[in-house]
Length: 194
Length: 194
DNA sequence: AAATCTGTGCAATTTAAACTTTACAAAGTA
DNA sequence: TACTTTGTAAAGTTTAAATTGCACAGATTT
Image (tube, rainbow over all chains, first blue to last red; front, side):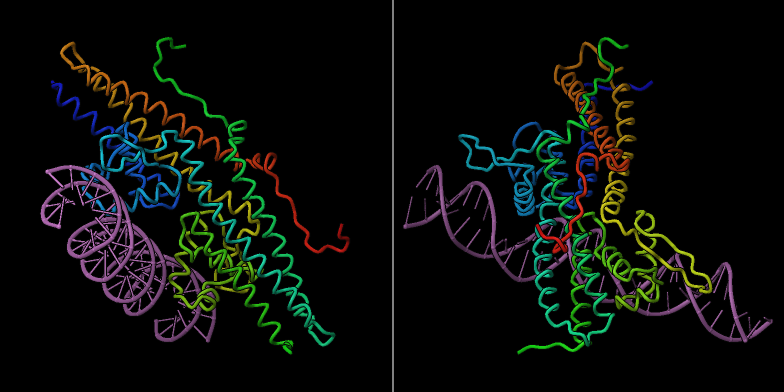
């Protein structure tokens, strides 16, 4: 018959927590960030208080340089921040503790960037087309005219699409999404089961 | 003073189209797929009719094998399909022409997978915890009890989060998102400007 | 001022992903 | 039946991303 000492229990609990951290790391790749970003997020999250580069390097077995790189990335993604701890010379990093908020931050960072890049390309192409149009003469083949027309339509569709994404980002960022897709707190095995 | 022949105009138009294709390829990386997926999507989209592996290899300068790999991936992502063309032995591939639909397909493929993986991990951990709980005795330290309790709470939060994502996926997939974030068709330089 | 600590720029290395080459099975054609 | 065509599996190569090691600047302590 199996049995656990107090220490063994602690060990087992730790290994459950590690599984969670690993999964966070995996899932994070869906946002297009390195799994190490997810791993650090998981580690700091589970730690429940801010951590230093050294303690992170310790926990992951990775170099301090890498920890620095990743934390910087996480800050720029808005899912971590430095926290002042008096009496310590080291930087302390903490992470967003709200899962959904993390989702939104990453979703927003990614897609805002895309929208921005696209908008500037669209402007460039609109200009180019306007320029090319001035060279259309009665000698121009039907083919050219059709292609030009199509390109215009293409840009119209693009514009509609990227506006949509832009609105989508705002829809998330403003929290309006929660009005329509709410988060329902779970309470497993509560005192008063139905 | 600059001027363009008919052929030069065609050339210029083509290069505009290529810019669009390149950008589609770039943006596609936001979904965590290789830019080649985006490139093929762009090429077939611009081509306006189904293409074969050979013509794709031709257009991209890549190997036919790679084209095969990528098209298979696109099909599994629900953003392309084989199209039967009578009289031809070759497979012809066509792509989803609706940008927003493509967005939804990719969003859905990605996140459904995450939800699935998570759900099964959660089940496993719930079981493990129940198992460990049976070893809690009055000798167990406060520490162990707290950690165990916390782990439970953690799993509750996870559950809430992944249910949310699951609902989010449904919200997109069902098209309900469009009720709240509609796509507004753009019509640049229409006949009757305001 | 010398010695230490901390974070990070930069080049080098390792690891993983993208892509190619070769080979071959299945199906079609002569 | 022998000969092509087509798609893809498998293994190898190239390219890009992740990670490390070294070095050093700026701040802190002695």
